[in-house]
Length: 75
Image (cartoon, rainbow, N blue to C red; front, side):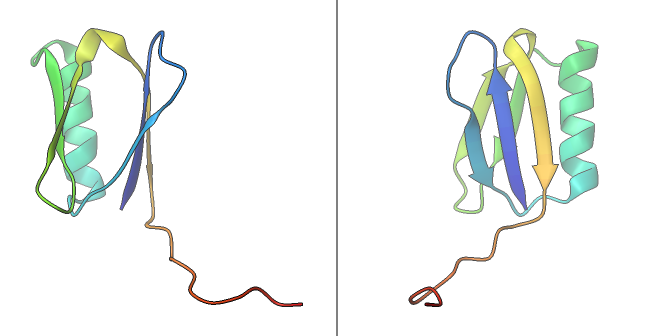
């Protein structure tokens, strides 16, 4: 699934593909926003961790994976 994270005072968003379920991502984000954790920690599909300070989160968008198109477009 595709996850986009907006960080305050940063012009670009963080985009990653994750194997975590929607419920797992929602739970981790809710814990970070509730103050239970100082960091939002997500793992992408290659096993890399993305850490964002919870107090700097602007938004988190959870969506379906994008299908990668191969080849040429229609004329």
